[in-house]
Length: 136
Image 1 (spheres, rainbow, N blue to C red):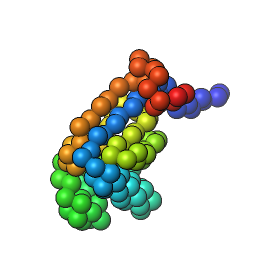
Image 2 (image 1 turned 45 degrees about the vertical axis):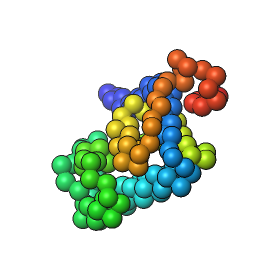
Image 3 (image 1 turned 90 degrees about the vertical axis):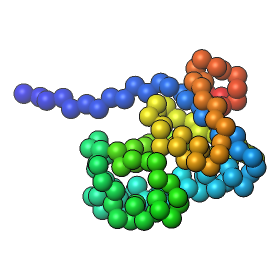
Image 4 (image 1 turned 180 degrees about the vertical axis):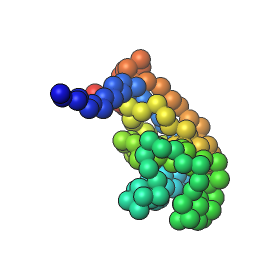
């Protein structure tokens, strides 16, 4: 008997999110926060403190310390694995531009809100020609 194990992910959001900031310094700071959280999520996964697909209701000690240092209190433990998703993030002047096929982006939105961004969010499938998104 053969047992077929398959993991399929038909992600087709082609999501674009643009955080508009007062200046390039704020856009860069938001990117640094996201990078720091992404790095800590990877370390927590490597140490076994974060298991993807099993959202936790607790932070690792190191993550809790980092969230305090970054003054980010609104991201819940169950949202942290979003920082491991395949997301392309670029700083362009006073804008932080995200492209991803994921729809679960609350943790990224929270960082942008906390840094004072005005946020534009759309599917590049429905709004082609913007210069952003897959295939642009």
